[in-house]
Amino acid sequence: MPSRLTVAREPSDIFKVIGHPDRVRLIEELRVADKDVNTLAVHTHLPPTRVSQHLALLRSHRLVDEKREGRHHVYRLTQPEIAQWIVEAIRFIEQRGPASLSAEAEEARMLWS
Amino acid sequence: MPSRLTVAREPSDIFKVIGHPDRVRLIEELRVADKDVNTLAVHTHLPPTRVSQHLALLRSHRLVDEKREGRHHVYRLTQPEIAQWIVEAIRFIEQRGPASLSAEAEEARMLWS
DNA sequence: AGAACATCTGCATATAGTTGAATATAACTT
DNA sequence: AAGTTATATTCAACTATATGCAGATGTTCT
Image 1 (cartoon, rainbow over the protein chains, first blue to last red):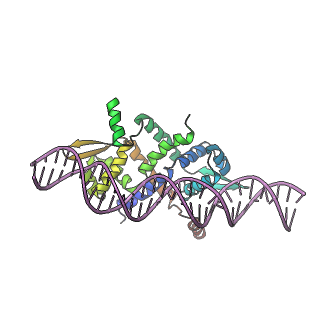
Image 2 (cartoon, each protein chain N blue to C red; image 1 turned 135 degrees about the vertical axis):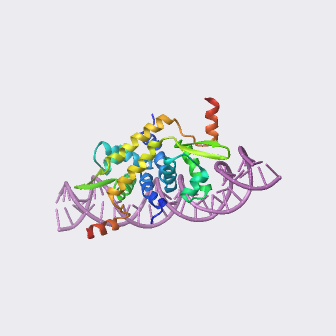
């Protein structure tokens, strides 16, 4: 019997994959339309190498899939619902206000509010 | 004007926080009921020190908050909706089947299917 | 004061991200 | 068809970040 901690590893892996700003950007881009690597690189101002590596990770978790069109590798979200999490996360952040990075920061906030 | 990449950092930080099996377990536990550190440690089979540290991180992002009751620090989810993401992630994982860890693994899959 | 509950700090280790060069593959060009 | 360009991936070295652990330090209750 797998422990609940073992079971928790799979969902946490998904979140870890989304837990990188570049990959959030890529998902945002792909939410609008399927795109090839270069288009993504241009839109995100990231070097193609990096985009490709992030996509490989997303692919290995099947959050995206790839189809080749000539020399272009066109990527597509397999689970557009997951992109929705980003929208919800942004809403949460707006409600919450800035995260406190430390206890000191938190105390400072109290002091001024 | 902050670049979109900068903006993407905040949501990705949230996902990163959830992107750890221990923290997924803790959120699952707190979804059921508010609990103190020791109770969480017992339920998750994690050392209290570690639980405390994970909670500190969750707290710094305001995913949980703390109220003291005597010498117990009782934690509570501030955003129960976020716990719902875990449920959705598990559903996605079940649909998807196992993630492919490498291209070779993927090729092997093709070969046998 | 002593015990229970939890946090904090500092260090060692592990994991993840970045970069540039090398490689692969398909499409042009002549 | 041979060579060149465009597109993308892979690899290896390096750097940065996160985790885990052990021990010291608060707090509150009795």
